[in-house]
Image (tube, rainbow, N blue to C red):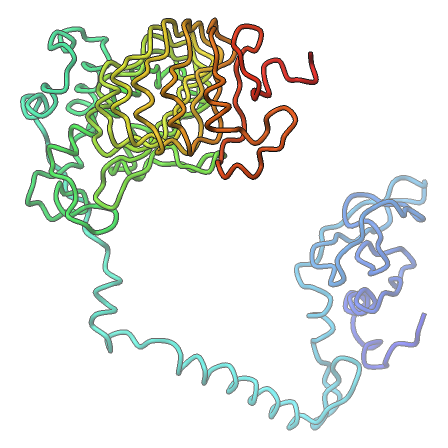
Length: 466
């Protein structure tokens, strides 16, 4: 052991041990201290030579001290609680040497020098704080900002008021008489479940008022429009077994979040589960891979500003919504990998703003309507009807998809020829390549080449699989 300063040696044994802990030495009684900076055990019993425990922090802030067990029978040593004061603090306790000097941190110092340094430190801390901290009462506006915000305004809507807003949206008025129908349950949520109370009638000035509450500070929706919007979302929720089957609720019908535009949760496809424009209109519904079980309600057509629907990979059944063709703002529609039945309506050609149209891997039947060619140059992404039970031929007017990137018609019972698409669109990844300079974006064209004539199709099967 290194020689200790005489001032430390004059301290009680407990103080000397604390000093030795800080210096990394053994205790006076010859036992090992668990808080040594050499890395011995920081807790529990520890015998001599134990080097498997994790390294203790340098300051040994919480390390217990290992002391001998009772008697000399070789039993396990006991563990005493750590001292509440850290070793540096113990060492920092100065020992009086005489009237003009103190011993601290291994040296002697003039009392006046210590006092001067302490005063300088105090001034360095207090003065900046006095300058930077605001003085209460000097800024009335700041005091007002610190006051608690008033609670959001609410309104108790009657059933008749709610029905007056939503009745026109019903596919059949009789649905409200069926207590277990999605429509009746949605009304019950609005009235009895509090789903409407955060919508204040027009002219209200609360945070949830019907006018002026758009997320971007715009004019916002009228109270009736918000009631209808919340009703439609509730119908979607109950139509697809949201309360019993959804993998995640995504805050739908949340009592704690009064604005439906704030229900959105960002998913791993880069979109929120629900999103709105600056006026509060729902623009996006993204519930992919969430175990939706049931049917897609016609009421979705009431969301007139909806541009994106992604319900990929769920367990949806029934036919495509009969009012789907009314949703003319749609840019992206993905209903793939479900159990949808029925046919593709010619009215789908009205969705002439669609950039992506995917109904692949379902159970659709019938033919591909030529009216879909009205999507024309706006179709910049996918058109996929792969994996259904479609018959007939691919319409010749589909050569209008000059900006499409992927066209998938395979895994159906189609026949005929799509050579006209090879001539016009020249997919870049066609067998043999050579079309990269065609100036058109089409990458892939897939069809069942055992039934459909297509020299430029790179599936199906893939050329290397033949």
